[in-house]
Length: 349
Image (cartoon, rainbow, N blue to C red; front, side, top):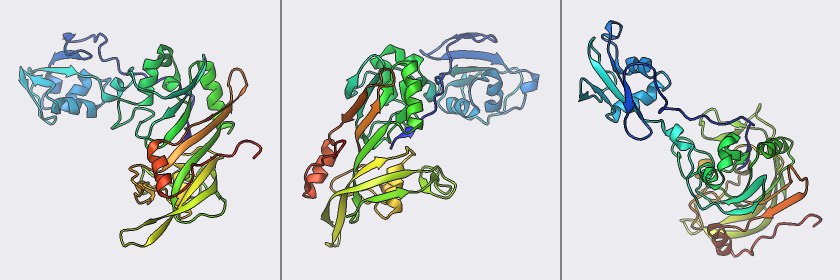
């Protein structure tokens, strides 16, 4: 799903290798700094992790605890792995300050990005299912952002390397990325003003034979924070759903279950919007287990593909439209249902 991102200038990584003005510092492992200090009278009987916050205040206590567990801390030359260990005045503590995973994440990685259009101001890429757009907990490398930083050096000077919207990890398809600050700023405004046109192809459980307009507010599910939900007080959200055909598959008991191929047009870009809206109407996406969609047709990820992206060039103003064919896994599922390859309507159809 696409979600507009704020125009916020860059994420600043921790500068763990800059000079620290204090007790002796020297270079340890590449990308790390070593600090040593003697425990004073005011540190006597303090927990090790709390004392370390004073020695390295730019790091969180949680990260310092992690470094203790990794064996990066020694007291009087002996490795210590218990962050609750009580200190004694006169002891000498040494810590190797490895960068946080987050600070390491914002680095260039040569990746095979499928770029379908590129000019001086922007690029459009066809993201593969399974690829994360922006580094986050559990996915600190191999992301679209890492690939962009390697693809063009100026990405490092831009907010989020030029990423102005994102797709879910397991959603495939088209994304636009700014390459200049002027383009990034204009694209963010265009997305907020709903001037970027986005269409998706999906496979959903159940029989959906008539067009469906889902106009329902979305916000974070208070019971399960990784989910979104249709709830009063949420952000206005609308998805237009057009049926493309129906097929059937057999459930474990041998009974036939309907599956609908659908074409979805977004009028807003909330997190998980299509997934939540269809599940809300009783048609969860195939293999979208987060929202109740049982796996089927050999799919290991939600059956959702960003198939079309249209917008006016943020600098030149010319109309641009891009279509991305379905990836192999979705195309195979379409075939197993006996459906013809989908054809998105052209303007004026």
